[in-house]
Image (cartoon, rainbow, N blue to C red; front, side):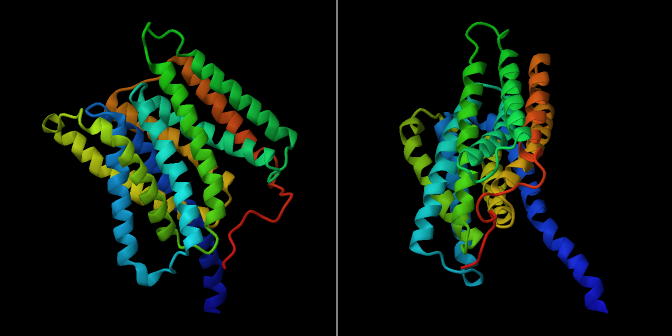
Length: 320
């Protein structure tokens, strides 16, 4: 009798856990835009990225070593795939992420990256034949692209010499990297412990960022870097990196890449909150309209066709 009562509750908890993991990730990601903006205000963006992921990668590696007895070892092939994913989702993405922050408000990045990522993910999966190209999804992609155009038009009134438009275009490149990373990460998770995969991927990507940062490190006046900036570096390494990437991998074990990126629709809410409260940033009215159009199009593109039909086997994780 007890098992009959507890089983549905246990099943519900099991179903909810991947989404709770992804929600924690999105809160951490939302906070990263404002926090990273503080850091790039006091040092080159290459150095800021290296400090964040150098520290985060080290923490993940130490955590993987401490908990090695509780997880399966990662094979050589899986380690290589995780490292390649890290080069894309850590190295490439964060080069664009921090570069964009050095040129544009964090509020822009907090909208462009999480909203365009699901659109680009869905479009790519359709082009690859892994999801169907039903007309509601195509229409949603078109509306999302229109919203992005409106968003960028909202910057046209910026003062001459403003780097905001360039920064926002750099954020678009970052969104493309994250979409590709989400799709690739799904394929490497089969039978791989998420902590070890995260540690390998973040470690490899963080090492690449450190190499890129070496030439710029000499330009930093380390004595003048404020305590606030260092506090944000520590927070970025622990929260939006170590915790967020681990939880993202854990969530991806049980849901599809497009579903995971759908959760990124919550990031603009968290990101806008942190950027507005802590940095005093704001949208133009045209950008706000473009944001709403992008969100509507992205939601329609990802969720517009009733259950996603696959031309191949379901995009789920199988052990072994």
